[in-house]
Length: 265
Image 1: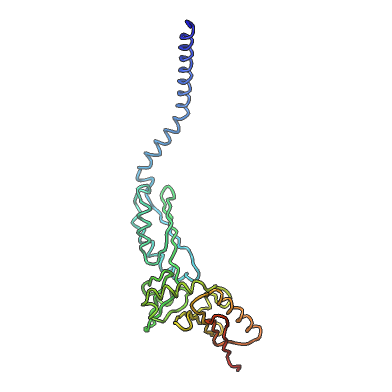
Image 2: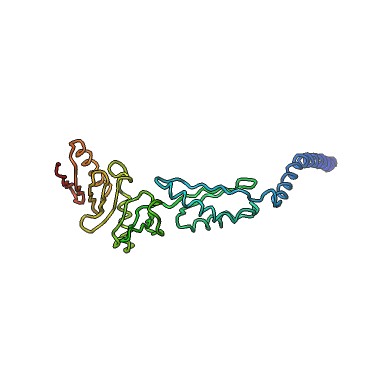
């Protein structure tokens, strides 16, 4: 027992020396890291090095929106110009994002710092469902959520079906219903977006589309739109194989598709 406590004290001293040596070794290894971190922090506040000098704005291209993109880009860039001259660390990307998204045409924006002095912005525009054309032939984009945007020039209008029925526009619940029905239409074949000239709705024939090729009026009813649209595609393919042309294709019925042919010239 007499040798026990001195032995414990001796071992403790050895352990303490080893810990001190290990601490010193770790400190030597960590010193450059600490210097780099401290230097980086000091440089972070250096206004000249991290001052924003360049703003790069890219707009995500949707189909047939080229002219609109060219028109909107300067307006969106203008909302970001106030960033120039600010410290890249002090800029709140969240506040900036909220500010830009307030633009009626902006659906979303992705922002990122590109050190040391650049902000990159990728802007996504709102998808247009319809183009409402009033009695004066003024054009107002209607978004997929039913929001009506300010009037735009004809040259800037994206490709979208024309809506002329003001009753649909004024009745928010009806507009929402028409948008929902239209979203079920498979946009290929005869129903390619470029081939749909106009859209309408009434309680009898339901959703009605005017197709450009062949100048065909298609009634799709108020339910099972996708199924009925696929039936119409099979009819158009058959008519094409038979070299016949339809004037009206009525698929609003539950179990049949009515076709009114054009008279052969």
